[in-house]
Image (cartoon, rainbow, N blue to C red; front, side, top):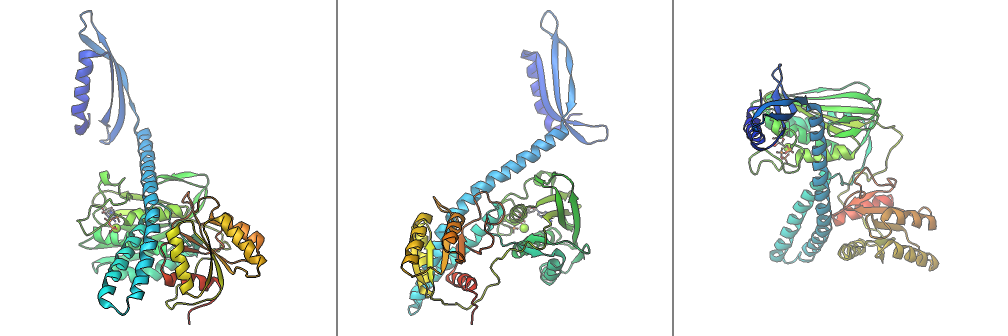
Length: 456
Ligand SMILES: Nc1ncnc2c1ncn2[C@@H]1O[C@H](COP(=O)(O)OP(=O)(O)OP(=O)(O)O)[C@@H](O)[C@H]1O
Ligand SMILES: [Mg+2]
């Protein structure tokens, strides 16, 4: 039996073939004996009598369901890839703009201290820019262009630590179970982003169980002997920790399942969901070298499996440790390298206001010349503060050459996003990265940490 949704089109096509052609071809869904639907290709050749009246059709039907499924997966992955590239590009440019807006608005707030009437306007600009920065951050996460700070993490303790917060998020009709796999190996992930991902999944589960139910988080291990396709990606061979989040809620309709990771896809009423939660989880997991799968039938709840690669515990990356709230001043000489004039000017003003002496360069090449000049004049540079993405020589290339000239020179990167390929952390993970847009206090903090100072 032909699927009711396909029947009209198949019949129309068939009639047309009878009237004017000798070859018949159609693709449609056909019911198997067990009641499931197969995707079939139907080919036939019409045999006509001497008057041209069709008398018979010779041909065959082949089941192409598995190929169709593969095609759909590929198509889905490509679509997400394309949306990701577009989103990442736009978000990156907005980040630069917002860095300027936010920074200048903060300066205004500071300058207008004695004029509260006028200060309100500057505060509104700064608040709106922060909301914009928050949105671009979420989009960059989806586009796998977030600056991650991966650290060796034991996921069972991370989830344990999150429990009090999860309990608060869930309503009291939802019971929460955690099933940790003992002796779980360590993964290299960004802790804040992982917590955020789990929180997003739990909020979704809660929303799907308004009348109560069970939310389960489970950890397990998975070993792949060879590269294998998981979700819409091919995972490298190796060991993975799998974090599964499942609920007993409404489930996801079949026609929505391929769309849930798309940014802005939501079935929630206007103002309730932005449709960015799962897009962020997807981007984060992929950027961490893992994969995510979703399994659901309507009415039977949903299960998300997050595959995160296991790494050697020795591979610790030195990221920026926790933030301080007090602003730490300094007096060292900072070589500031940034090719975007407005961002450069803002960074210069911020650095100077923090007490630093600033030497400015518009490119990597210029920065090296400044470094040489500084060494000759005995006014040594104490810190290289450089953008990562620049036309010409990029940040990491510059850092390598600067270190060859002045070994031991501390380096602080700043970036709107990580690497043009969007994969993994920066090539030089031994140097910290300050994400754009940053506030003056965050800049102060990042530099203070490079120099091993803390807030008083
Ligand atoms: N556990 C779940 N059970 C049922 N449906 C789900 C579940 N998780 C996600 N979905 C479906 O996927 C859609 C997208 O989820 P996503 O988290 O990306 O966005 P959102 O929750 O709608 O909005 P946001 O997370 O930005 O507030 C949801 O609107 C919902 O239809
Ligand atoms: Mg959500």
